[in-house]
Length: 101
Image 1 (tube, rainbow, N blue to C red):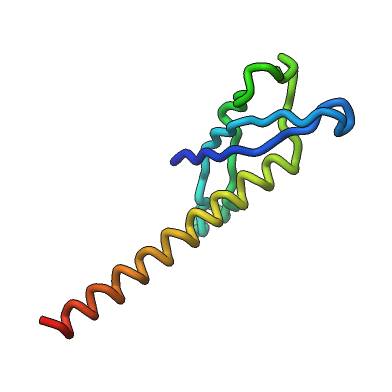
Image 2: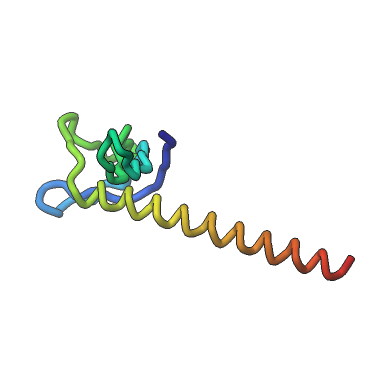
């Protein structure tokens, strides 16, 4: 499992208070399945949620909701897309350098 991190805000008191936080999450790419094991979907698990503004604290019992899990999945997808774009750009640069040489 690898880890990801991003900044977002969480809402408290039915949306009255926005708390800026940093979320660290672990990610599991899933499993395609085999003859012996069924497939497993990709998933994330929140490792920590830390306030980025020391003036506003999260309650000690705060639990992440489905929206925060969805943000983790989106952050992971965005990171994968950025990495694919970077690899494609590197291939284009390598091809261009090969033509110039």
